[in-house]
Amino acid sequence: MKTKFLALVLVVTVGLFLGGCGGHEHDHDHAHGGFEWIGEFELTAGEYLFHFGACEDETMDVGFIKMGDNITDLEHHAAHVMASDKERIPQEGTFEAKPDYAYTLEMDPEHGHIYFTISEDGVYAIVTEHFPGEMDMQVFTQDQEELSPIKEHEGAAHEH
Image (cartoon, rainbow, N blue to C red; front, side, top):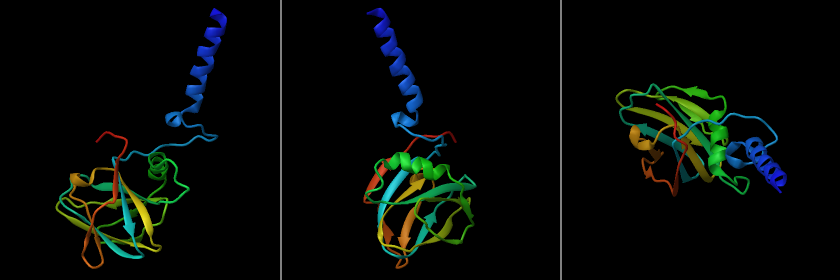
């Protein structure tokens, strides 16, 4: 009886250890990127503006995920996107926001503007390294309408 119990404890411990990644089973090794916030936005094809207030950080990582049936664990998916290589975008720059891709936005100590385009209508999760309130981040349409997320998620904390 004691041997069976110890064997069971060993199997459970090894299973949890090997499962890794928050308890999800994987057949690959990978890194997870940090993020603090995810906002889901209903976006149509077109141009958009990130408007930022004062920011102490020189950069901020931002990722885009096009929501669909293939996204079963948004937070986990976001961690993978944020761990990927990122294209650097300068202030006043413009980029095409590709699904499942992350970018490093150059921030300004006073305020900033970075433009992005969406090529296909849909609900997009915008994943940010920091909470939007930390730099007064706002998203505007090309008609200067401020967009609010239809859903928000708090992400994994990271150190500053």
